[in-house]
Image 1 (tube, rainbow, N blue to C red):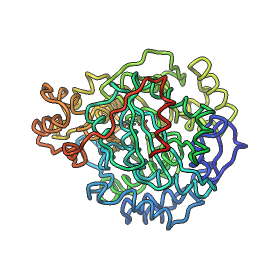
Image 2 (tube, rainbow, N blue to C red):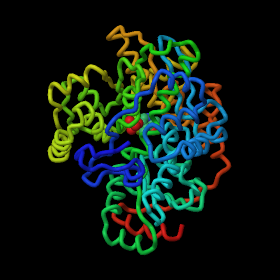
Image 3 (tube, rainbow, N blue to C red):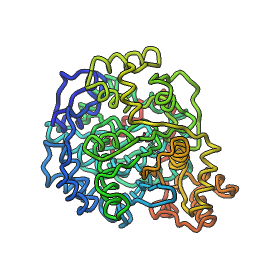
Length: 497
Ligand SMILES: *Cc1c(COP(=O)(O)O)cnc(C)c1O
């Protein structure tokens, strides 16, 4: 299978090259030129597999320059029982009114980012090898919380890699910060940046484009790499869990093979919901994708107001910070496919986004998008109300991001009367966002640090996930804080890791 840039189809590469490179040289995103369709025999076989085998099978359809043995080996390590609490890797929990919660947070860092970032180190190191890269890959990550910890955990002590994570000093939750600064591993480092997430992100971008730094790293046998969600190696592993969820529903008799489902996803960068769209191209029978946003509702407007994407608007800091995003990078891949892989049209829209902050999809293309996608948004008050109601009525405790999706799904169902069973992506453990969840349940936060886990547990009778409970015994290892203008000086650390 070949991959092309969304902005220039003449740039064709292998899967390994796409993963090793991350972003295409023209700034576009690598995309497969066709989608593998699963036969009914293959669907049948998938229902009999465990998660690891399903993941390896789905990846094998896309990463054709990897052997089946390689991918099975990677999946066995990435989704090992001891990393996912021994439970189902991605369990589906049935709630009232056709809601099926696809819990993607049973991994080592308790957010759905683990589903891809436990796999990416294996894919990336193998891809570097396959493409002849001999330098050590230094992964640099700017994070608003979840990605940083998941990347640290995924890359910790992986041979041939080092990883450095930058987070905004006051921009992450207490538990997220504790998770990062206590990270173990000889090849990891964590640094706080004075400023907000945008400051951290633009500071990291500076490292990637500073010729002097790149040359110095090269002389030391180091090369920079990124683990962010535009890398094909992060997107591909996410396709598997939608297919897996469907197989589980079939096995449990909730749907018959071939019956349609809806899929609702709390969305930031558009990666997670795009993976569901890719699963549909492989044959997953999805009726509607429901794109859920918080108060930063740029995507809701895009889907509901005729296909104009306009980032010229206020930015809000919300209780679901991993969705506080105004540029949803992975939407570019959807535009590529709905336009019939029209690289020129995509390049024009992206040029317009970068010059004026907006673009409008041609009317006939938007009609295709509208046929498949619905959308909605929920503010912090509606999110809190949903957390409280779900807990009171169904004794189901969910985090702020997941609650946005539940609310948007309920609104959709009430508005359309569409009762198709809905798989709702549950993207983080509620214990990652203790403060917001405690307040949503009507409590008053009366403690700090790991004490928050105990308070939320005490209020709900729900135990904190083991990896978070274990934070209590851990010493902070990293306390570096730098101004964003001093970020280049931190790269000296990479040599010594
Ligand atoms: C990253 C994240 C999201 C958004 O996912 P995208 O792939 O960026 O759309 C939603 N919820 C949580 C908890 C996250 O960490």
